[in-house]
Amino acid sequence: MIQSLTHLDREHLQEALNRSGQKVTTQRETVFSVLLSERDHPTVDEVFNRAREAMPGLSLATVYNCLETFVSCGLVRQVNHERESTRYCPNLAPHAHFRDKETGRVHDIELPPEVIKSLRSILPPGFDSEVIEISFLGRAQGKESTSN
Image (cartoon, rainbow, N blue to C red; front, side, top):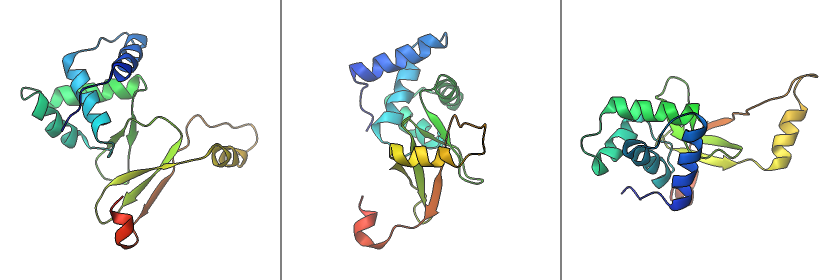
């Protein structure tokens, strides 16, 4: 079920779009709402199917365009694992991803500031990173882990 955007989320969307010369549209609000409603790193097709529940006339091309706009203005990040479909993540805080081989689900893993600092310290002299992308691939261990 798609939740309506909160006032704060709507402001965040509007500010990011305004900075890049874009406008808020009903379609963009709907797609952004899908991304925030269930933080499961959906593919374009998953976003499209969920968004059509709220907006049946929405086209796949419009969903692609919305997602490209969100990536270009820094609202979401693309998450790519090998040759699988691109997934979309609205969590812009420094974090890693864990992909469960059995379910295909992608989970966020918080990276504490000391870990980020340690990772940056191993870069070659004279280099600095703008983005750190870390992905784990594996399986959930035991029943208690799969329920989270």
